[in-house]
Length: 283
Ligand SMILES: [Zn+2]
Image (cartoon, rainbow, N blue to C red; front, side, top):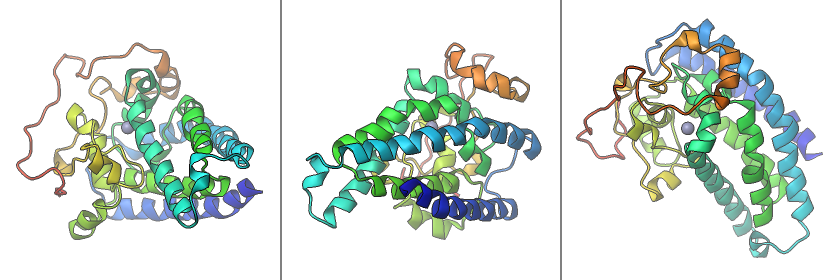
């Protein structure tokens, strides 16, 4: 029932949002493209073909089923009165999304997550470019853990719709006016902030892990907003060759050895620290 309601409301809303972001990133691009759109779009859509069904058919039902199964128990969050409980549930879910993203950058899960990061440009379609294994691997953390803490099924699915909307927004190549994005970045992870997370400079990739709120990056001192987008090279330095990114190669990438954070010639992308404070968004 809850999942049917999710399909009925969130599905079309996310499709409209995606279309809007596609038009906006085409009209007002943030970063210059380095590869032709059809080359990347074909790959990203083909990678999404198993990943989105994996999310809808395994992760989302697992989220609802775990939460429903544990709902009658007395769990940490079930002791809170309303509306404090709903607010706490949302904060817990978003903090779990932040910590899960940090785990994805640790060696074991980086095997899966590098398929997302080695996209050579970043736009809306990068938001769908996940290895289906990453969806399956997230089930214990993103479905079982919230249920064990007492997050209710309706909150899980409502948050998931916001999570998907923010994922689309932060990956889009939409140039928002700086005067709009700077205050917004105090609250949310924005396209410029997430562009820095997809940079080839390791210090910058190790920043801005949030999915919805930027609060967790503030608290963990992983927020970095002061890098100009014109200076960001998107991707992972070890994978610069678009010809080595066929769909079968990307699907098999989790089994390939981990490579050092360096270009194939051994050089390491670096950048001097910008003089502005970390929390000042650069153009
Ligand atoms: Zn990442």
